[in-house]
Length: 367
Image 1 (tube, rainbow, N blue to C red):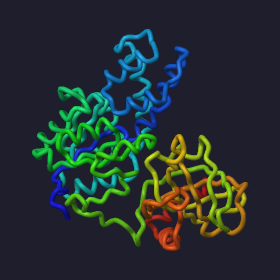
Image 2 (cartoon, rainbow, N blue to C red; image 1 turned 180 degrees about the vertical axis):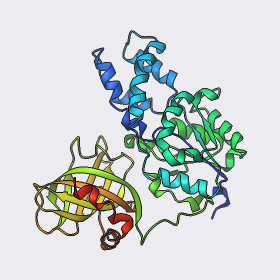
Image 3 (cartoon, one colour; image 1 turned 90 degrees about the horizontal axis):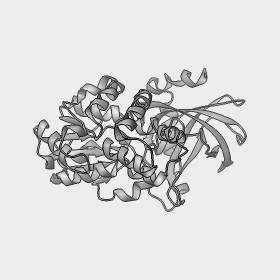
Image 4 (tube, one colour; image 1 turned 180 degrees about the horizontal axis):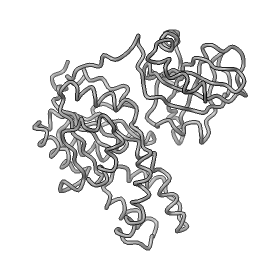
């Protein structure tokens, strides 16, 4: 292992890295601007990801010509955000990683561009792992927010670590820029897949923290896979079957509801159960990825039904995904990358009979 990758402490961003708050609050600006006859500009809003509150609010007021001061804007928006923050869930792999590092004595910090008061509203969503952070910093507790390195330098100081021995995990470009400027190593987990090509200056870029390998950074490895399968927090999908690729392998027709409860960071080979309206239920292997050859990146999904023969093209399906096998391989096309192997099927079939996975089945079968 390269000595340059040895780290002694880990610093996490909050919004879009630990908690899926950005997706939980995605529609608030649309609803607020509609009252002024305005529509959000997606390009401008993407650039605001990770900005300090005052910078973001000032930009929104100017870009949309709102007759408000920053203070008036904040008074109107803050209650809306507080309500939506309560619906935010931990992102895939987060709870597992934080608890693993804490258990192994790795010092942890939380460093967010959110003001500290807003961080405190979100901490209860971290349940049994929020207390793993010995340092919690908001953007209002340092001279300059991200992309300045100030918050990472202060976090390292409070952890008693040299910034160069810290690993920062971030989802936003401004966060990655600030972390690199501090001298830390950086793992990027982009929350906006449309910006993924801009993260190449991070040390490593992942789709989700399910793919994080602690041993690459001199940290204790995970030892929680069960016969090649990783238990994950249950994810629910509603899917409409598209064209059959083979007898039991189908594409999924995407619509506004398909990925309603699936974070944008989910990508790879997963497994669980499917419940049909007329065909009963089946064990399934699910491959999910992003097609970046489209003008706007699109999510693509295939489902391999392990127990159900015949055509399912018109049958709507409810999916319960409860396990992760691996990341997608790098291929020339997204359809090649989504390929499900015999080994994937074997791992999924065996895992779904084990108590760690089978205990979730009733959650779907009684739905």
